Length: 331
Ligand code: BDP
Image (cartoon, rainbow, N blue to C red):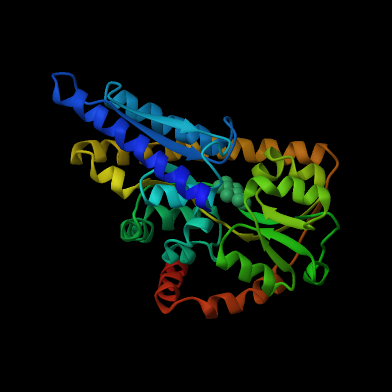
């Protein structure tokens, strides 16, 4: 812990030195150069990373290179939860994360990641691009984040070392979840043992049998090679968890309103590109996993799974329950 704090403090120092150097340059005739670091957990070609790079390209183009966003893929700057903490206090400028771990810092996000909440992908996008998505993004500022864009992440299902055909098969299995209270509750509600763990540790935990399974979408199941060590994929589609790009509020507040606007707009404009990359890679990942001979278990009737997750809705805060009702009413 001490090491993490020391490391973070030194990052903060380096960041503020770089910042003042930038300002000093800016006070001369030359326009002030700004370099912002964006942390990403996935590899360089994953759809979210491609979206981040498109965002960076647009910012650079629209500022004639004055503002540069450097994308650090493959968890080079740390695992999601640690990165989020550093973004919150300004040591890392931006990140693209799943809203699951971010909800630990901004619980209003739970309303957007409830199980079996959206009728389909279009429903989710209507919510995210509409009033509710905008409202929730705005409230993130209260937790030190500026929400910039939503990205697609398909739907999540369970993958395991032994076949899971019914809820009863999950009983007692140790299932890795993201560092999210809601996800812990979801897995416990199915009778399994929830094991929160950083994404980067899941492969070896599956391989050594420390856990019996995890849950994710086709692209993550494939790109992480988890499909090699957990060969059964049960398509119950329990959640659609949006991804988000957030910037540190401390960092954004140092920029001019015009620059903030360029950044917001560029991130928003990278969404369509990310979604198209997502759709293509989702198909590629599914085809590759099927071709590998993995056992894909279809769930004909999702009703028992939905019923098992009802208590999670009852436990939501009243404010989140109201948002859930509004989400359901979106047509
Ligand atoms: C992937 C998300 C990534 C998450 C990861 C996980 O893209 O941001 O953190 O799941 O399960 O789908 O940790």
